Length: 355
Image (tube, rainbow, N blue to C red; front, side):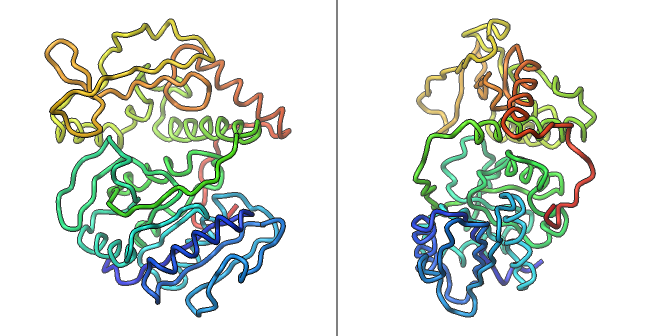
């Protein structure tokens, strides 16, 4: 599909000061005729269009939800609005995604146009040490998934995979990137700079519990899809996702492109010594002459790429012993805080509209 029209959706809730900065940056960095949709996902108190600087131009649109419908639903509302406006590339920005690259919308269109296999594009190329280089002008580095605060998806890929999964309470961007690759398109990062302009705050118990139960949902979803062995899928300390067919193929090409092996047995500690609640980090010293940002270690005569970060706090998918206890704790904590009983991921799911 020829990419001729890009549109931007900004999802916001509360934080008018942060949104004002995001809107101001958009006004100065995109082409004047680019459609922009701002989705107000139930802000309280309600801010005005003038207060956050949304222009009165015809190509700027505002959607207001009377209540918080959840991140996934709000993202999908913005994508659907851009789709209906005839956009060929659908851009999502969180309200704290501050774009600093001038004329980036034209550049993004050119990248999609010159790389028909690119399905999902994220900014900040330097943030992703795990990548496969795709040389070219303009080009991108192929990655497995990108952070969810800023990205662009090709319209025909959106037709294939839909938007964010409204069942997931966390890990939506991991899920999104996986589905893009399952549709036989690349996820790529390029040199468009976007600052995560989050004022920052200490996560409360509910936000942490939402992350933890979201990880449980995500792993349950894809272990079930690939007919895995439930939560105990793959090997420790390897990321479980490497055992899934799309990631196996990605890592095969990744290791070949970078002339390295994957996942050595960690020499610094024994996995069986890791107890629930502990954090074990494998610290790898950078080696002169190796590619920038590569996390490598030499065992014997072989260089390995290390992704052996154990976060045994039921917050991620790489863990040591006690993973069943961690999963149970995540489910129990969510029920304690919300009264909602987690009963597993439900297939199928309609990803083209909100729940």
